[in-house]
Image 1 (spheres, rainbow, N blue to C red):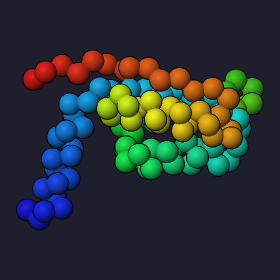
Image 2: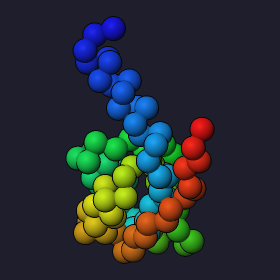
Image 3: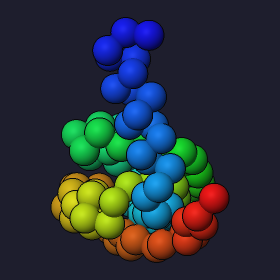
Image 4: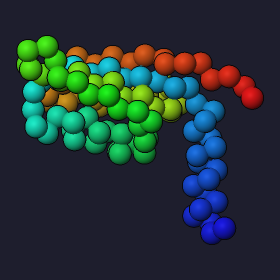
Length: 102
């Protein structure tokens, strides 16, 4: 196994030990809104585990739920970055599930 592959495998194991979070976002109807929502995740090096996007009632915007695993300080940083985006009306962070020791 190469050094890069070893580092990646260790990073993936470490991610499993972090809490799971869900970021709920309400945004304006904008063709680029979804790309803008994902950019802070790339900047912070976090891969969302699940993304659910639906049109808001009446087509006036979109509602997105992004589930991910990260340390609490990274989750708070993601919340701040996403909340500051232009199309975002509201954003809130929820601790999705406690991590149980194996």
